[in-house]
Length: 320
Ligand code: UDP
Ligand code: MG
Image 1 (cartoon, rainbow, N blue to C red):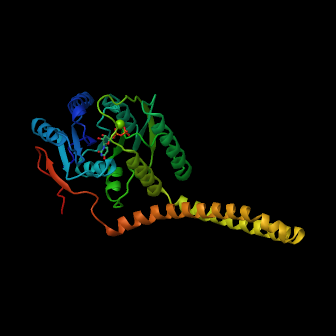
Image 2 (image 1 turned 30 degrees about the vertical axis):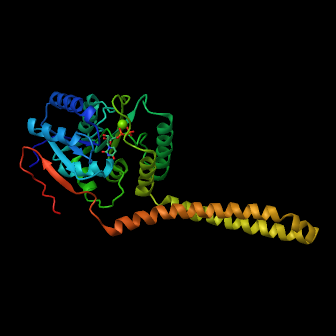
Image 3 (image 1 turned 180 degrees about the vertical axis):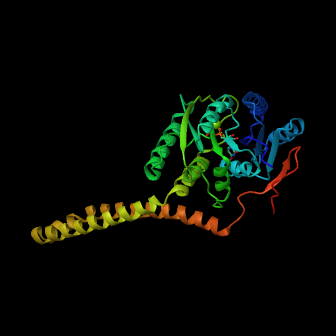
């Protein structure tokens, strides 16, 4: 049943102001590409009229498939839900807020035609706040360092994947997913193209500060256990330093006598506090992993599809 060539997968969370334009622009671009297409809109438990609008659109337009989740699961879970419903040979993900112009899709398709499995994109002239840019920069550097895969912009969701990659990603059952990193794990040939980035015109970002932090940790823990290794590295280094320091203190104590040592009490305390601080930090990091292990062990489904609205017969039967 893979008569569809191109699937767009778009997570939607409270985007009623953008939906109409989004659907129109995406449809136009897809028509121009000239291959069979579908647009999978995943409503991530929106509280506004988005779900209703998606339903209506899917009734009106045969190419639109609406996937309505029963509550808010987060952008990446929503995209996974969409991937599970997409049939295309090539799947393109993008944001619903029109910050990734749909008009850039043909550029990605051209690279797919060149034989790449995963096509990422780099946002030119990024229209986001300085804080968002800084956090992205940090994350990108960390990912590049630890995966060795040189992609410049992991935060940009305007990306194209071939069917086998999508298939592989759907086999991954961990709960904290960061899709671009996951995809790169399975990709044979990857490339990137520069794309425009528009400012968010209607509404504001759907990511609160806390959600953003959580996302960064998803990314960090989804790709590597490097922080854990770093932990033991730092721990080892500190142990050595602590040893040298105490040896030094002991020697000085012998040379200068007890009076000197009493005056050094505060120094010792300050060092102690430093160590305690570092330990707590390390424990926090451990906690991040443990928390995720806990989540995975519970093995709850990543999402439940409430309803799939489309004019075609459902091909993927989602068992509850
Ligand atoms: N989104 C979602 N669930 C969420 C948060 C966001 O599906 O819990 C969607 C949102 O509708 C948009 C995309 O994810 O299509 C990116 O969100 P946003 O534009 O707010 O993020 P930013 O541009 O700030 O990275
Ligand atoms: Mg955005």
